Amino acid sequence: MKLKPRKIVSSNSLLAILTVLSTLWLVANLNGFSVLLSVSCAFLWMNYFTTRQTIANLEVERFSNRTRAFTNEDVIVTHRLYNNSGSLRVTVLSQIEIAEFLSYNLLEQEVTLKKSQTVTIQAKTSFSTRGRKVLTDFVVVYEHPLGFFKHWAYYHADQEILVLPKIMHLESFPSRLRELLPGSKSDFKLLEDTTQVKGVREYSNEPLNRVHWKISAKLGSLYVKEFDFTAISSTILYLDLNLSKEIFAKNVWAQIRKNYEEEAVLAASSIIYWLTRFGNLIDLVVIAKDVLKTNYTPKSDWVSAVELLAMAKGDENGPQLNEELAKDLYRLTPSNTLVIISMYLTDSLLPLLINARAKCSRVIVLLIPYGYRDPRYKPSRTYEMYPIDMQRLGDRAKLLEREQIIVRIVKPSQTLQEVFDEIQSP
Image (tube, rainbow, N blue to C red):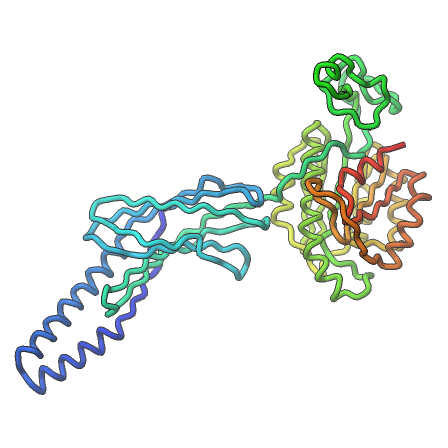
């Protein structure tokens, strides 16, 4: 992408003062020294305009090796400068906007620009947060060796890099398989085709008749068979990033919500990726500052869903989950699994969950008030206190689970996969 010159700013106060003093001296006392000083000022002014014109006529191009990247993934930005005029020693800076009012310098480097030669500069960076990052101004700075003047040439062309939430590995997810595959049979009791083995995985509390004894003998540890399914799941995922109006101590929970937002987006992205990887259908509704939705179509596209999540931003006074869910109840069908990820729910939502369960196959509510454990690390003891409303909802979870309304309060010492395994265990 070619960058266009936006403006040139110059500072010449020291040169202007020197010029005024030399002119007064020349008028007051005409001698060799005053003439020499005046001639020197004239040459400095010539150099001032020449260097200003040189940096204004630079040809600047910028390339990025990625327009889409995951969090903490390396992005390489390349700048090419071509100089049509004389040689200059300049400092170049490239700026990137990472939030609405926050930016930083991607690079700051001194380079020598020689006539009719191209200079290539590369900078490697990564982003720890998701969202839209914009490469903005490229600045070329020239300063006179003795500090008499200085030029800043600003080259501009917005170039966007969309940073997606990183996908976390999941082994399974407890959505119900109710969408029949063409040409397959199912009675909803056994949804695996035992005649079609699609692979193996390590043993984890499965029945012994699933152990693949030949592979286990070769590899020296127990492996079980993975069968193809005769049905797939149709999941509708509601991700609530806003603060509930019913919540107590809003100032405290508003601070907790900021960390929850990133954890919840990572969880939703990982679930979407796992479901679509195995051919399952997924629709996404994000309750954020604006309600964001993917279309209710039979197409599984995890990329567009994760891009939507990358742009989602929650709010303390945004739309409410119960209001949006009530509007969409008519969309539910008996083959759907309804999944809700939220930070805080009270028992006032129970009637809505019961109405939703009457229309769909299963309702799963995941409450993540304090985050969850990264599977790379060992569990530790936690002492978080849960609000009374949330505790009461958790106490009722066992009764609700009989009706396929599964409520889980995820603890910071648990991984998401541990929670999903707990739901799937008989």
